[in-house]
Length: 257
Image: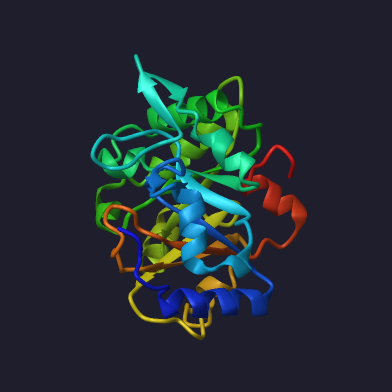
């Protein structure tokens, strides 16, 4: 199952990030606690990139397990999210968490208020403090099915309702940026832009369109390799360039941060 050798694209991206002063993290549908040989997935995937990266500052994970789609930091029990025990492992590694909610995109965007409340409840069950971002995962093929008001209702619910209130972030590919920005005002919403490619991206992120690069709300950039030579464990890379420490603390959480 292990990669036979480190992919050169990872090395190029790591080198680029180091030169730009950016931080490197991971985003995965698999549990950090999954075993790969004698290690957990978090430790193993860091080694595939190389020891020079040290411990990754952040790890993007889904809030709620969805059967057949992804593992989550919580599982639903009687409709209520219950922590799986994965989050403490991530924290002990010195890694912060970035929260992702993909319930809407996998359930045809049926109920934004219920989706936001589920995500809010999951974050609260995990002990995540208020005002942290929960990024709504908007997969490109599902965008046509998303109602015009989905993000507005989700944002209002998660930011103004409930005992604990969080910020809504948006996570989608650059190819759908124009469509989503026409439906929803992204100016006050932290945004995570992702692109998929099987090729090295030596000039990345200069390859992104200037109109996206210039948007101040874009806090995370992501390169995803199409390779999947490690079976069900797919390794992704996230790059972030927060403008300030206060920004960073809104989308990346660790008790000691």
